[in-house]
Length: 79
Image (cartoon, rainbow, N blue to C red; front, side, top):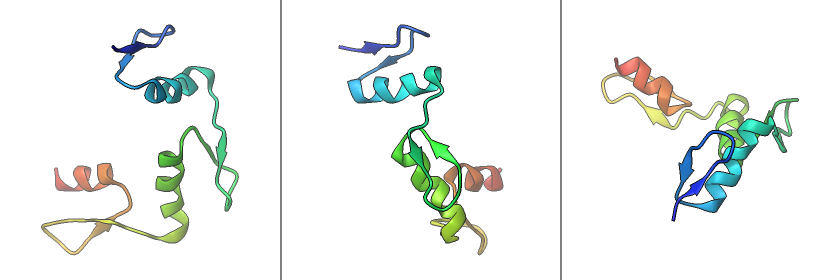
């Protein structure tokens, strides 16, 4: 059974995904980076942000030696 957001009508398969989505409407960002003032709505966003501080670049380009910290940056590079 899909779980539907009352604010925008978007449907989710899991209750946890709907709950995380609700933060978007509330502007709630409960997780703070321990190294800077930035805040995030979920642990995935926080983990992605922390690569800024660690320098980790887990997404290598298959066509050149460059590496990227975010998958979407790699995808943009490949276009």
